[in-house]
Amino acid sequence: MKLHLVPALALLLAAACQTPDYGRALPEGAPALLKLGKGEQRPDFKASWADRDELLPALERSIEWYGRPSSKEHFPIEGITHARALESLKHFRKLLSSCTDERDFDASVVLDFEIYKSAGWNAKGGGVLFTGYCTPILPGSMTRDANYRWPLYGMPDDLVKGKDGEILGQKQADGSLAPYPTRAAIEASAMLAGRHLELVYLKDPLDAFVAHVNGSAVIELEDGSERRFGYAAKNGREYVSLGKMLVKDGHIQASDVSLATIRAWGAEHPELLLEYIDKDDSFVFFTEIYGDPKGSLNVDVTGGRTLATDKSLFPRGGIVFVDVEVPDRSSPLSWFQRLFTADDEAYGSAVYDRFMFDQDTGGAIRTAGRADIYMGIGPEAEWTAGRTKSPGQMYYLFVKDEALQSRR
Image (cartoon, rainbow, N blue to C red; front, top):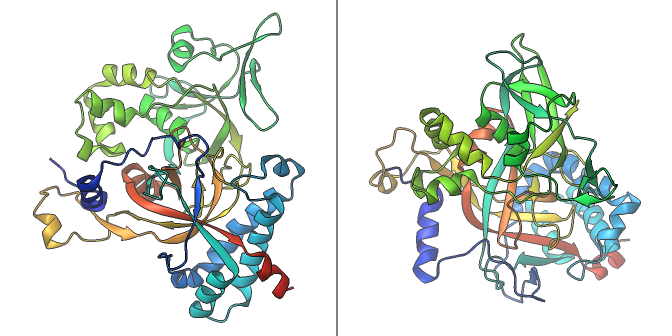
């Protein structure tokens, strides 16, 4: 049995007190953000000073979104106004360019910003479970043949979206709306066939499913060229984790679940794999893109800098500091960790404490106790994303009014 201690020890220690239910909804009326009290431990921001060149492009994308008139419709949220959220981003940008060193940066952030932590799984700041997502690189073909039979589809014309991209349903012949069919119903009825919606064909149904889960994919064609596809819409149905279903039914052990183990299990049980995939009601539609994938704010996502959260709880585009450890195969296990595993693929962990921006959402991200880190494009990002299931905390930063007044 694999025992990956990346988050295993942390989860075990947390469970000794109380088993976290990261999917638990906040009690009605409970705040999603808790302001740090005087003397309460806060993150150390010094190391982020060295990341300023990487932070700035992602920060500018959040500022870009705030410049759109429609962004004002999502505020106030958690007591934060649109103006304050935007000024927070601008002031953070100013500090990144004006501070002299890491100590000056850390002191200036603490002086000029109020820091809030997520209410987390227990509404008391108990912590957040972080998972990862990415843009995988998958083999494919622009034409269907015996090897490439599993299409990614474009958005059908009977799927109706609202002004903010929310799914309203399927347009009926009489003009009314009905819930869009589930994945199983779409596949069983072949309702998308013959409508010229096929964008590209993949080798494996799990590859197609991975593209759906991540919302984007780079497809590597046989001639060596690449085509990129990003999220266009979904059917509006709830996402169900394939890994959770396989664990629940005893096919994979909870301590062992990852994309790699799911792939291995699926290769041995291809028919059963299809049955489980169909149990996820969610179905994603794609569009060809010519740059980086975009998140739910319709701005480019940035590997290691874009975070997906529940947008009904947290301010869109905001500055977030993530405090977590993630799997890292370049990090060797300690002697103590090796006592618990004989796995040749065993891996250690890496500190992933960094500033990010709340620029996306996800099918499984529906509470204050969950967040999804965009890891980037390609095999390394896929490896990390597929294994990330780590407890931690996230902090939101909003500029103080007096800081704006004193520094103008």
